[in-house]
Length: 247
Image (tube, rainbow, N blue to C red; front, side):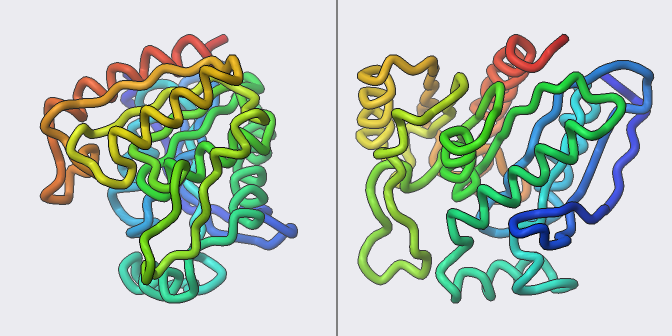
């Protein structure tokens, strides 16, 4: 654990070289560290997402969380920004890849970077972590209950997402998937379908599904939080990223 970290709000070049807000956390000890792009959940660039970003820094990673809603709602509360973006159908996939790519580039530019970067995402961010892993040069990707990698949103849903399963062949790094057995988006059947597709393409992946957990079981500030599943999930994350991003 790293007791001394620095966390700050910065601007980075995102998709199209747009200057967007991001939250950066890093250890203060001298050394070279792997990087993690934290892709926030659909509720937005909120305090919990920043807490997760700091958590990575205390575990010896450079971590950055880009504000994917910054263009639509600069300066707005996370709830208001999320409502605005949801009404517009969500974050376009192409722009997401550009914003995560910009966050990756910023981490690599830091003097304390070891040049290795992975992504982690929750909820819609889990889907976006998979999308980034199929689109960008990364060393690792973690998917936390990523909805609609397989399947599309139900009729009338406020977000315009489409399945990403057709991109599986382009996946360029190992993937860790963490899911709840009680979740419906993705359901256990959809998780199994994604696993089969990745296996058919010979991809390096490992999935863990936790009984008694539904969607958003990592989110400590929500009723869906499941401490036991979250604890086991974090242990898997540290082991997985430790192998992929160290050195």
